Length: 184
Image (tube, rainbow, N blue to C red):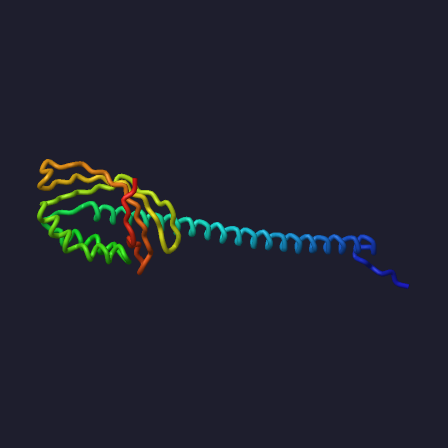
């Protein structure tokens, strides 16, 4: 009988080597699965964080747009000059909508006569503005504005401070003033 050559490997060490190889393969698959899971988790977390940043930027831009529209509306409302009141009232109407726009437009002819008769000039300046509430379609903003008013009764001018509550609505991609109230 011829002796079998095992090239230096006997049965037990060969089985042990196979077990080690199989264990290494299992660890490799487990490591691959773990890395895939971690990659998926990191990707999902990155996507969620990117969405949060996008939403914050969108919200901040909306707030800035609301404040800019309210400041401009208050400035237009507190600035007028009898020499070009048609232009000044048109500026108010450009940033207005709804009942406020209708009421202001209906009073423009009478206001034009009154402003011209008194030779009124008012230069407004917005001091502060803050949003009290806002959503995607509407907002309420409180504005503090000063103006120096000159007219026939006060040729040297009078300083006036206005506290305004402006309601705005989002229409046609713009924030427009739908109501103005003088408060406190």
